[in-house]
Length: 168
Image (cartoon, rainbow, N blue to C red):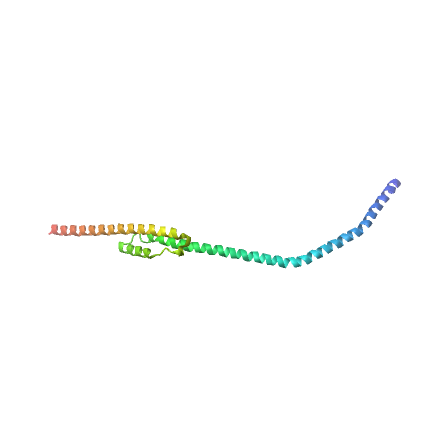
């Protein structure tokens, strides 16, 4: 036990001396950490407003970019809608009489394919031409239907007259 104590006591003393020698270094480390934190906070106080301004400007630029993109989408949608309105004329007149179809042909003819269609001008002109051609075909078919109806009505009238004469 005495031998162990003779070895253990110096070991304890080494640890006590190490802690004692290290204490000033730990104090210097804590001072260094505190000073670094103080400097970091002081720099952040200067940096944060600048960062906030940068972030605000980037968000403003993004809002402007999105607004421009939305405006472009709205513009394209308006023009494409006008072109679609031209095409939809066909469905609107499908079963109308010839004189009403003729009125739609005149209305369509009066639509001017101008610079307001911008890069879709050719597409609008193509839609107008195709729609006009289809409307003319529909009008001609309606004229034929109406002539056929009149012929059938005349035949029925003639048949009724013949039945009446035969009945007499």
